[in-house]
Image (cartoon, rainbow, N blue to C red; front, side):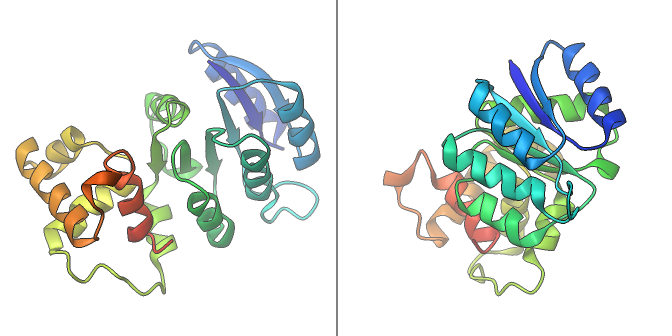
Length: 212
């Protein structure tokens, strides 16, 4: 699996490259700014890009804007944002453009190497991985269209937004997988997501939860 890294801190970039390389990934390119990232995207075929948010010259949101542009140039390019910060506006735009193959993890909250590597694999495979703190901040001050859901259904949907499947949700809530399946079905029904959208209902439900 070929990976591209966008990280301006040379020590962190080197560390990520070594970690990924020693874990069976091929690091195709490392960029330190948005321009270098755009050039690397044009030159290399990769399975996923791991990007930081704050880059030169302003250290605000260059990384997220670069990721959004990269997905415009290469639709469906899996992107895992790995940062210390939640940049709400562009994070919402990144998700709204299509949350398949998108992740957002906070560096300070990833406590295990295997957790990070699993997130890279999941996003590269088209999954969604969102840190609960990212979900929380994206929800701040947003009006919720989800009043029809029960508290348990909202809890299940929140775990879906973190990228968990039904089995993992059942383990987290200490209930049967059948119970989770029923709750998920109720979520789809109450959010008016018809069976014809079967391949995308999970993504659409998460986008509704985030108010996108």
